[in-house]
Length: 162
Image 1 (cartoon, one colour):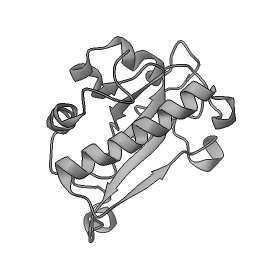
Image 2 (cartoon, rainbow, N blue to C red):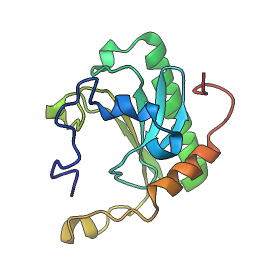
Image 3 (cartoon, one colour):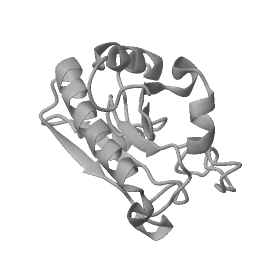
Image 4 (cartoon, rainbow, N blue to C red):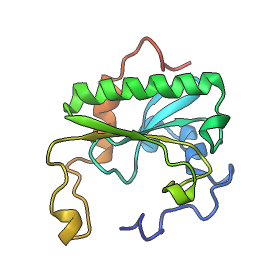
């Protein structure tokens, strides 16, 4: 509810204030970064829809998918694929929602910096809490989820540290 109410949304998401631009300067643990690539990184969502809700984010402050370079487009795609493989290995979801919200009107919380959502889904994962309590229960601390996913991330191949 803090996020929905706007308390933690940046009032200014220009390059200097953008949380997606600032996260890579933090340690992986502090920034909830699961993996770093050459042009993009993978981070846990602070306000996850489900456990293991990741985002693939280009380092460059860019808002529109069509403005990504070829290298960024390829790496975002490869990191998304790797994220799905890792989440499958760690959490065995039944499926995934993948997506980008382009622009505030389309639902982007931080519209100025593109990010691809990777949301693991399980049969029956929607329960009564969002309806009756206006909250969503996530059964694991974000730091524990980050550690499990980072430990399972492959150390060779596409999307590795540069």
